[in-house]
Image (cartoon, rainbow, N blue to C red; front, side, top):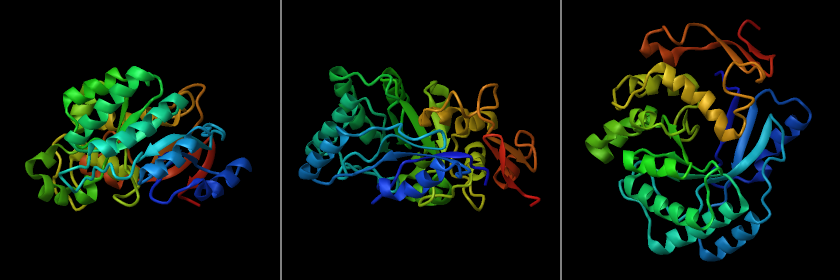
Length: 311
């Protein structure tokens, strides 16, 4: 599929042990793609929060190498604080947000990167209110904190994020959920996620899939959705499309920032690692509806051929 590196935000039940095979291969120089990940815990009670706070105090990211590394914390800080794509309402009860805030403050004090899963407008406001309060106590600018998904983010919220030095991770989940999103959110779904609004805001943002549970991990499907607004099968579900150049930058160079490897990855440039794809057609000139069908014929990671369609 042409994936040379990815950021894994974890999931339910994930722990450091699940990444041991990657670590094993990376330490032996045998990993042929770059895997970066964030610690995920999702405590569900105040008592569990206490245990996680103790763990945060011992957290040490960046102990790996340029093929495999833990880069921070995410994606759900406190399990009861939920915001879900196919549910219009989110849980932002004060008592639950207070527990989330305890965890976020501890992560800020530790100087760790944090990515939070947040989608609906009201939930984004609630998170921003707490992040601004945390920032007044322990400034987070420079920690690269991000929100992922942000399906209903508005311009005011994007500007608040920028003031905090935050970034946005946007995903192509409507590829397979677009019709369901229209059933739940009505006409508002035409702007979920608001790719054009995010692009025009000037905030640092990256484009990804959120694979594999909610959409395909094929990057060309993600790029195709961004430029056409069409889900798998061809139905138009999004009107916030961007240009293919904007989509490509967001999916490569911009994403390197989230893995703390922007000096090494994300673009073909002197001094950077040669992670390069050779495609069967020209991404910039094929019809927009054909972007999703592009295929690598050769893939290089670190200048070495890791895939050759002829072999």
